[in-house]
Image (cartoon, rainbow, N blue to C red; front, side):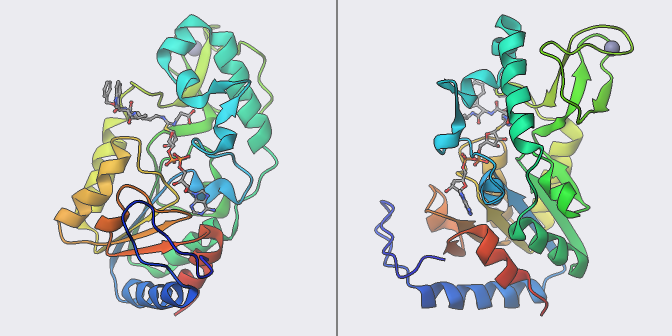
Length: 261
Ligand code: BV8
Ligand code: ZN
């Protein structure tokens, strides 16, 4: 929670005091308690308190490579072994990590809302581990692999070899994630846009709003009259467009917002 910190963020925003945030938490809680259709969109920030490095934080680097440069089909075509080393390193880091109170609060919220959709940009699988049900994984899941030969998709939590092969046809496997420059699964994408267009409230949590098409979802909802709430450690390019923006850690704010009303 921003303890009386003054937030300029380039938007000339006034100082945010703890009491502002407490008021905002109550306001959002009240809105949520009266809503039928709620959508939550999460990014790397919601997993940060579980110990998952975010993309743009200092954790976004691996052996001096930027994640952005390795999460592409070109990088995999050029050097599949290096890209698999990157993903195997991330699987190793993620393996022992647990959902945090932010993930858990969203499970409680889902149980109390008639129509709840959780759209996540994260591939860490922590929302499902926490117990969320109606999840749309826009960018895939690091625990799933896809065969470049027969196309088979499998869930695999084992320690994979440097160049894992399909047990069925022997072809090389790839992580079943969406790389930069690749299209998202059309049915997942259309379901996500459908949900945001009919939502009464959209909460955007822990995302820098830099990756499309996820970044546009909030504004699509706003144009359809939804109430937009942002929870982030710092202001984002969209902060001024939100109805309410609460600065602080999602693992602290979400339990306050989602505790039973
Ligand atoms: C697409 C899976 C159509 C892989 C990911 C030029 C050529 C080609 C494409 C493009 C182009 N220009 C733009 C594009 C589109 C491109 C894109 O958006 N690029 C960006 C970089 C400009 N998008 C795509 O390519 C998408 N496909 O558009 O298809 C198409 C096809 C061909 C050509 C054109 C278009 C596919 C995008 C999916 C990429 N895959 N992940 C992997 O992870 O290995 S995206 C990856 O990065 C993550 O999944 C995540 O989505 C994203 C990182 O974003 P965030 O989640 O926001 O994380 P970030 O670190 O940035 O921010 C964390 C935030 O949390 C911060 O704001 C921080 O303040 C906050 N925070 C931190 N701690 C906390 C917190 N908040 C609260 N509490 C805390 N404790
Ligand atoms: Zn195969």
